[in-house]
Image (tube, rainbow, N blue to C red):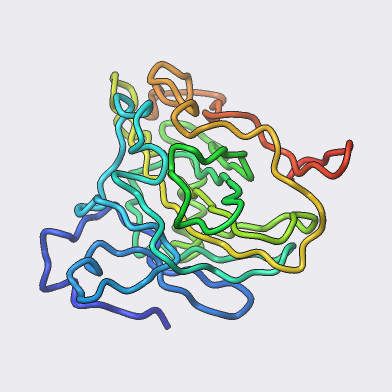
Length: 253
């Protein structure tokens, strides 16, 4: 059962958008970041990165080139890790997600090369781990977010089986498109989570890029009219990445 906090006493923090409340991996449940936690003394360590988005708000396209897009506004590692074996899957539990906020769900990974708490967010080099966007239909059609909602507001992230053991950050993101038909209307909701991977191989994430280079406001997957007839959607950001092993490489999925 998911743990609960006295959020009702903090109505200013409550929003319909949602956040990753908990993460489950290899049978263990971990606490994600919840803005209400910052009012506890001391602030508890969480696997989710602490962020200054008290209203569960978003990052708009005019901030895609700023540090806010990395792990949300003023995002910083908060001390704890999801312990997971290479090849295993983790379930991310959103506390809620509105049916009107349709769009892609995208997962990235970056190596910390040590303690993730010692890494500057802007220095992380991200590789796209997985992505899901438009599924079928149009105006507005069925989307990855509909799959998330149908699965009780959960999403599954799989760690590549040949990934080297070590500490990594998973950047899990929803981009809501309900207002994306106008300039600066898309809404990005990045969530960062620390993972300590064990039992891995010799694979390394390669070809990573900084999050500030992921998207442009004019990308076809960012400036997009959801409530019209369409026959396709280009998921924004870099191509799916690779885990490199010696001189060979294989795609994540």
